[in-house]
Image (cartoon, rainbow, N blue to C red):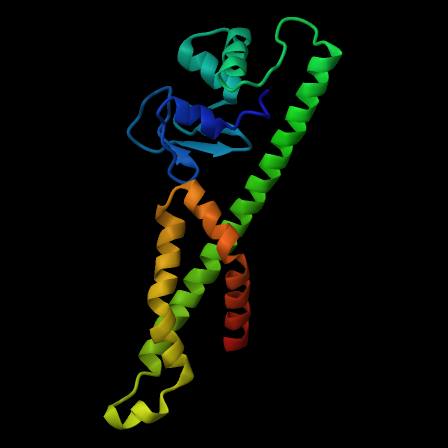
Length: 198
């Protein structure tokens, strides 16, 4: 169960907003982002405590671990048998659900790795475009006939790359995943462009 329910989902159900991987501690209710998500657990550096999904629900709702597990099972429709042996059919469904959850986690991890790489690539390209716009700008009207291609590229692409960075920084996860699906090839091409530029 602990592996099948992302701690981020549990935090969201209690109205706790993540800023990247950090949030306010749900236990001591401090003002600072003292808690951090890692390995599907929440750790507060101020309390020096860690919780997985079951432990966090038990702590916040003042439940036993078994009752917290039952609550999570019901809330997220996990279909687990708690407190009795599973039938072969239930065990088969649970194994399929666990396999699907593993696949979702792997996709989420792949997306997070891509997102970090993409942020670094687009940031580097954005800085390069700004430099080209500054360094290769025409000195006067006489230079308009022979514009440097890097200046032209910077003028054409700078606002668009800025928009892409804003999307990655400010949009919700669904928007960012849509960006992943629609911009993967383009980001790879930008990586190659940066390599050839250097």
